[in-house]
Length: 144
Image 1 (tube, helix red, strand yellow):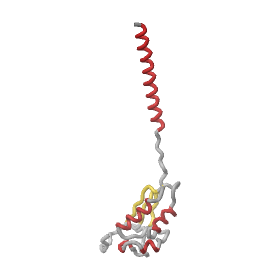
Image 2 (tube, rainbow, N blue to C red):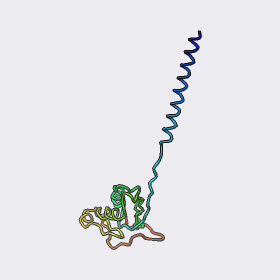
Image 3 (spheres, rainbow, N blue to C red):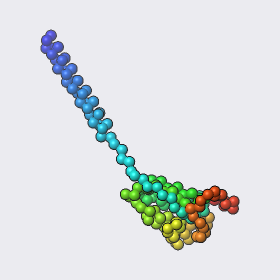
Image 4 (tube, one colour):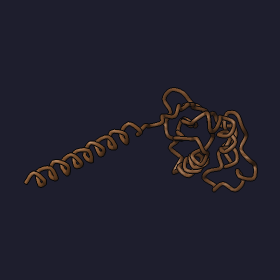
């Protein structure tokens, strides 16, 4: 009988140690989980364009850049708001990507070849104002 009680006590002790180790492992795993927050830079600048197709092309060009976290072009104001990680990209790269897609920015003229390949509705007036302030109304003649 003593052997049975002793065996049960040994097995219980081993089982408790095993549970303690699993709790320790779970705590260790929890402590190792961390999140890395990336510092994001936000900027807004002018980009010429006319319609929803322009919006898609401009935003696609910017969002394809490694380090860009968001890009939204405002058709009425003719400007884009971009958030990006400065350790991965910079404003010159962003302006160049837009220009390479055929659109003028307030810093760079769009690629002539890319501009000529834009659909007719996207061929904007290369003299149009950008980064418009105040109340901006939709052009009534625009069906885009």
